[in-house]
Image (cartoon, rainbow, N blue to C red; front, side):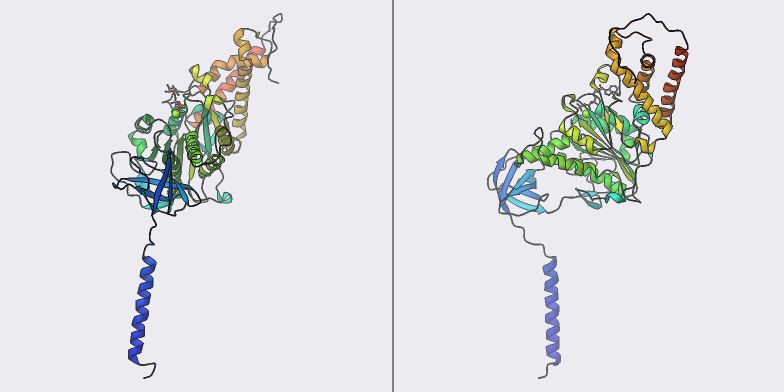
Length: 479
Ligand SMILES: Nc1ncnc2c1ncn2[C@@H]1O[C@H](COP(=O)(O)OP(=O)(O)OP(=O)(O)O)[C@@H](O)[C@H]1O
Ligand SMILES: [Mg+2]
């Protein structure tokens, strides 16, 4: 029998084909899942042994009764995995089964999300049925090469006079709204949401009151506004992991629309609650606290989140972002406020004193700054801004003397001018929360305020001054 015998040839062919089929089947077969067991639960930290899963992977914890609790791997030590629940924990018992389900933390995104309100896990909170979003994107986002980012060149009209005129914001800028509790952060954020022109609005309501979610959707966005918006709500009572996911998810959704060439407005209320959620998780898995009770990972997470906003590379759109930052006890040196100030492109500071005196929005213009203003506004505008701030600041520095009557009119022409301009400046800074002021109007009104006062001062200085008046305390002057 020769080796080319057709029978042998046929058998060899069949054999090779069978091997090929087996190899293909082997490749497509899912690898076996190694289950573990729950060994420990302290607070919200769960410990499991016997299974392996990477950080960020999802697991189901199943009781003998069949109830499931979803959890995510947040750390490990030796053979133990540390998990945190993503939904409500009820009825867990020792040795419950721990089944790894998903290795990655990708989320579904797409235009199907427009007009919807979802929770930190992407589940719909409105009664509009399930969401079938077609695209998948990582929760952590894609890194953008800093050299490929389009520079910020265009002014963005936010509809708030004081911000448009005195802290001009550019399209693609990331701003912080800093204030103590109850000073008007959420209201100002709502004003900017309504007044700013954007193709898409993504709102992340993270760790704040649940009541505010409905208010935001119905009163601020309204039916029309909601059509081009996505709201991600992870209020204070949701697990720390869901609050973190909520903030990351809102950013991923904004990134998706930016990469489609849209101009996105991303609003996050609040960045502090995001940091506090990270602190809860880090402390629970044993990371030591460093600055004022915040472990180092918190300060690493903040820039990871904030850096994802901004302009994209050449052909993509932009994400202009506003993050509210709670300044505890109005302490501007709070570590989260300090860290946020360093990574954001500017900050609007709200003052409790102004709010208490009924001046809304309570923007403290001396402390507020937009780092991009010099690049995007013309020199004339910048000069007017500077003049306004100088005059306003001069009045503030001498306010106590003026109110006590210790300052005598005529002692310093610059202070006289500041006193003269004060009512006009306060009118300029005050704005009804339902009334937008366009960028051009803001600029014209700024010009009017400064120029009218200059004319008045010139008239004043040409009049004879009283010479015999004395003042007991040295006033701060304009020099
Ligand atoms: N522009 C405004 N006009 C009139 N009232 C305002 C304005 N902004 C804020 N307020 C008043 O201040 C209250 C608190 O505002 P807001 O909820 O925005 O504060 P917040 O800084 O977000 O507080 P928290 O830190 O507790 O979330 C409002 O309920 C409202 O009464
Ligand atoms: Mg608020």
